[in-house]
Image (cartoon, rainbow, N blue to C red):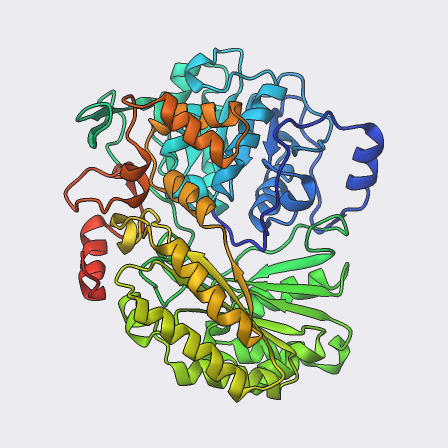
Length: 558
């Protein structure tokens, strides 16, 4: 179940405390709902919908909000919310327990929450008296295999239609045994039942040999479901307790037309869709303004909405002078003086753009259709419009990257400082992590990436540029999970038991030596185009053959 998000990662509790009535009352009473929950029918399905992190993080997830509200508006479902630090009163015998998964490393909290509910963490250990455990979200839609042992049901794709199909199908077999339920659900497009697929390997530490359904009536491939409407999602609850305080979020676009070769947000959610201005965006914003004056416009490329200028003009009306406006990362060449003026007037001080690199050669490899003069102009326009700072996102370790490309990045940042003196510049930089269903899924992490982050830090900080590198070591762990197969479930359990630290992963790999592939295999190795990928049985918007064509066009060496 995929939706955009403004979530920022924070550490969750690995051993959630029991919620107290006082904390529960104070948190949930602060919520302002923008939908009308339905009173459940007497025989409604008792369900728990969980977010594997603290309330303040989970309630900021637009995807979590929308799915919860969708269930809460059904009379045939009695849904209660669960976070690592608080919950609504939970049913004693839930039939469905769901998780919205936005970050790979939150798997620890999923296991802890299952244990707190006295549910076996392995799907294979659950009986007819246990609920069905389902999950959705970008992490599970991209590659659910490292977590496959923990879930009975995984929902692949957009939730608008898929969620209703899931509930309807479940109701048809509600009183049946677990095996019958799972076989029935497996027939529904977009519903993946991991236990009904057998994975074989060339050897315990080698590549996957095959992924096959265990019965003739189980589909060989499960296709991600795509919602194609022009009414996109918007907040269903606003609260001061959220990480993004009192914000009403509205989805302006879904996916991204740029299709940078590494970008999961673009490739996994294709095609690019836009919300109707008159039919969706303006009514949603008006609804949000009844409870808050803070609006967040979401999407991977918000300013590429065909009617974005009209939306901007609408929000520039004098009657909205007290509205605080936030916009997700925008395409660099759409940063105009008018945009900057509107944002500055609406209490926004900075703008975020993704440039990836200062090297035009490298941007051509990744399909980033952007020239350095456009980046400079964006900085000039931001300052001219009254913004005080510009945040840039970059990346090191991109396939095809050379040391000269880092020098180009340093030169670009210097040119920005010269062109827009007084504008505060920050450069957030991550390490390339291969993601499933993208053309760069076959590449491994560049082991030189850590040194390249250090190079940028050494050369940017003396220039007065705020350099913010993401942890290289945790990027390695993210790559491990992003590219992992089912054998990783044993490692993830051990890691959690050892304390969920970087050292825990090393200790777990050491203990499992000879039983699963090593870190080099999952993270750093370039994979063959012919090998079976962990997600080969899961069909995303583009086929493997099409991804290979995009990879060839990129011109990166392989």
